[in-house]
Length: 288
View 1 (tube, one colour):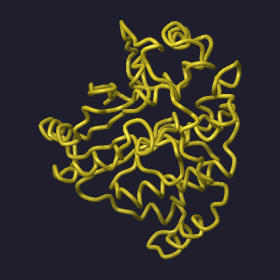
View 2 (cartoon, helix red, strand yellow):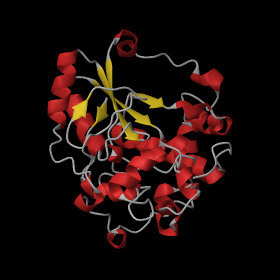
View 3 (tube, one colour):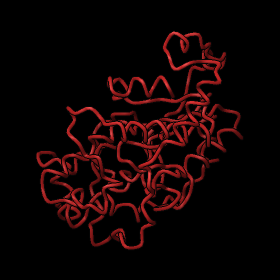
């Protein structure tokens, strides 16, 4: 399911391209006031948080090894459930052009999204992805209306995307200032929806696509865009090359963001996107 700025429409993880016939022009959208942003969150020293994770692993019942983890038995609901709802919704729903990879493609100079963005909103150094945030208001979002629809469809579990490749957390994170709870709609979208899922007697899940953020914004490093702005590195970064392995600092942050989602929201199922198969992530995935 992919959301629009105000509603939802059924879709899949890599949806067919969809074009808005009348996109909102840049002059119709308020730009993000960077000077009014909360202070960046310092996540450079993770020793205490990682020690807490290690203590949980040491307490069992499973160790951070595949042999131990393979002893886990999935719950009966997971074996029986035939239908779940997967929800994509984020800043990319404001431009609503093509799909949720607009975040990346609007910075790729040979893409249709790049040309569309320049024509509709102006050059990326004047109106970047961050500038869609003030228009991501979600003022019509009613989580109970959503879960009622899911129930009527026959769903047994719901998996919202907690964070997509764009690096904007749809939950209240202590590890980032770039969240729906602090900016845009100013609400804990993941928490609100999962509370409604509980009330509707469905199973709560969550999805993290954070791993791909390592490279996702790298197109903006190749020309004059706001991705190059040092003041925005905690949002757009790392923006590294796709062929490079993520470094230790990024991997630690990835793990601790995943742990944060589990500790705070207690999902019974977690989905990771395709980059979870990167060798560099393997030991962190076992620990998680």
